[in-house]
Length: 79
Image 1 (cartoon, rainbow, N blue to C red):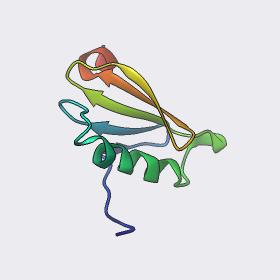
Image 2: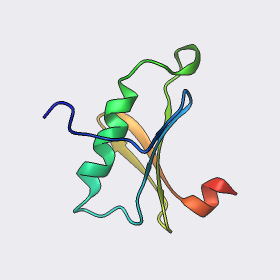
Image 3: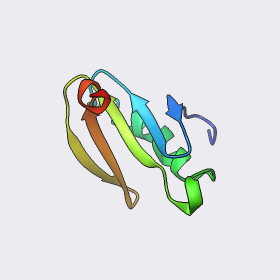
């Protein structure tokens, strides 16, 4: 379905998805919303939103559909 996605938090500067752990089983579902939001208007001065996945303890940099997605532990991002 074209509207079968969700993103936990969207601001003019960020799109944030939260999950305890990013796994091969949930990766497609968790990233789908971020990729959909990246295509929406609303960034500041034409700048793309930063795409983030907040987890308990994972840290990574992913490339999906030509977009950069940071995976960061929530505690580290909030610090």
